[in-house]
Image 1 (cartoon, rainbow, N blue to C red):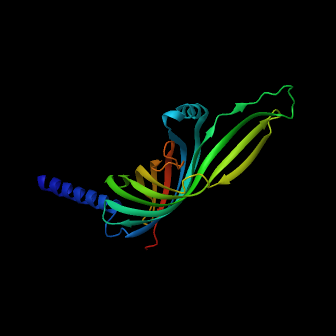
Image 2 (cartoon, rainbow, N blue to C red):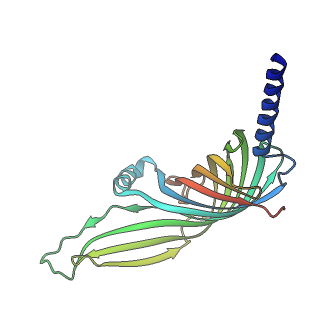
Length: 243
């Protein structure tokens, strides 16, 4: 009787180990290179660091300007080194900026065809080369990881959108772009934590809360600095062609 129980226990243990191994990612089946596409909606803003002479302007802008929604989209190649670590190289396009609060307009005498309010949005649009290191902390079916990185960003242009609203609730929009007067290049840090779900042998999905911050002021002045930053939620789809 005791021997039968031991044999049954051994059979159950072997079965559990077999099932666990069959559901866990295998190093032998992990391809060396995989591809990734991602999209990141983000809440973006800027930090002002003005000198004492211009502190009043910094204070006024902090009162008038608010965060705005931006985004980033990327294509990347990942190189797996072992079960826990990989390096990711990619190219991305991003739009990061801020907007002003709406300002009500008053006219004397008032006319219905006059605008009632106006506000503006300013977005810096970059093409970037990114490099990240991913380290898997734990997990099998769902893997949790950290992903610090850097990007080198080239400014395509600064886009200014001015919105005007009329009393009949209609809106008018004017858009202008320029590169003049702004830093043409930036270096940024990227910090993310993520969770990866293996959908199949060839496909996986990652969700990453992500922080991005520019290290170079977008205003190329010595005394007055403006640094962009963003908080986003990245959705990354990973795939490979190995059968």
